[in-house]
Image (cartoon, rainbow, N blue to C red; front, top):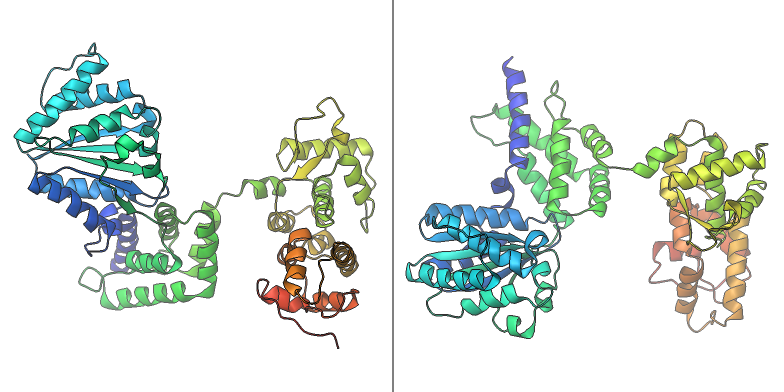
Length: 498
């Protein structure tokens, strides 16, 4: 019973850490944004000076969390010396509504009567007068402008009035702007920019190393009396092994490629902690992969799992046409490619057309443009909306897909690849791009015209087949081994044909 208690206690501790912004973002080091922002605002409060700071970074990078931590600390240290005003660009980008909201919050803060019928000029004059009175009372007014870039539109009268009032000797205010645009300060007019302090704090997404440090910081248990010593040591050792595992690094990279923000990473950690096995009491690689599969939304794969075999074959034919440089095709071209399959099923044209329409309805394929709406569906050009990797995963997950189709989906045949290489060489030779003196033109042209690297990545051609194909292609001397291009596409290795 005691063992189960400390296992449940470990899960609750990890969850509470992930949900606690203080544990994640409160870093007392001098280089942290938390320390820098707290120093700027606290110096304005203690030294009775004006200041303006921009907090810039992508969404989910921790701008609001750090700001809230700083405000909470300052309200505890100086409870009677700070007045807080909050505005949001999504709600108060209009100057009239912004000044009205400022007047309302100032009246509520100082227990004054607020008039809803007050005009724009009345609210503007009231704000300037209140800033002077707060300055004389040694009280700092902090303006938090969320979505700052939306306030930088139009005539920017709100920003000009705020920054211009801060030029007064008696005023004591701080303007904190939050924006996901890194060029938000460049949106300001000249008259506004000249009154701005030009202080910015950048909140960048964490790197892979920083993400791993955050994982260790959150997932390791304390070595103290709160947990049994042997259990805590073994738990931390397993966490260290998981983070150093190549499979976990691949899963983490795949997850961060979608969104590398701290908020996205914490969501993943919370799901992983929730999947921890209470019987063993340890977090495993299987728990990580299970949480990744449950949290990663893949609507295209869900649609592919529910497709019929005919619909999968139509998608497969479209992918084959895409490899053959026919990214735009119509229903008739797809049916022509469908008849070239090794084992085409005997479906009528109407049945195939109905399956084709189902794919359009599921948004796995779409029309290229709105032109030709009066034409029949079978004559309108369409394009594929899924990648080769998604199609490959969908074919593997679908039980109605024949096994040979799954194999062909992840590999292009050697004759097809040879014909593509011949076609590429003919085009390059005709345009005089394959010159022996400059092999880099050959590589860049191959990458530009046929995207050979995409073919290698998406269809998993074996290196031996690629080398055999290049040896059979009529390339002029000197030649470039295809394996060298695969390994180093940006720095090709030149060698002569033996």
